[in-house]
Image (tube, helix red, strand yellow):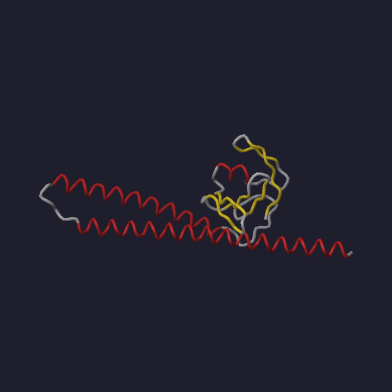
Amino acid sequence: MEKYKIICTIFDQLKRLMKNIKEELYQNCKRFVEEKQKTVNQIISSNQNALQSETKSSVGDKHETGRAMLQLEMEKASQQFVSINEMQITLNRIPASNNSKNVGSGNLVLTTLFNYYISISIGEIVVEGKKYYAVSPSSPIGKILLGKQKGDKLIFNGKEFMIKDIY
């Protein structure tokens, strides 16, 4: 009976640790999106100010070229803004607690190759000295992982790996 209590205690501690790691990964993703939003907003504001302060020069073609370049920059920033808003929506949809046995959004997936946080694609995040990869469910690796279970063997980029655990 004592061994059972010890095992249960260790299991509970591991669950709490994984919950804390998932929360840290989520916060990293959130900060990433906030920083991107801030940067794009600054670019849009700067370009709007430049467009408004652009005065007609004596060389008409040069003026029009400058305005056209600013317009292209505005369009590019607007596309980035839309992409960042989509990331924010995806983050907001991540369940606070996902105890599914199948990989889905919000899961921390530990494999024999890498560890993945199914959320948005921002790449490597280091938490407590360990590497995790925040990936979108629509990314190539995300598509492979979705719906899989602990113990499933998968192949990605010619490398075979197994899902060790899902949190």
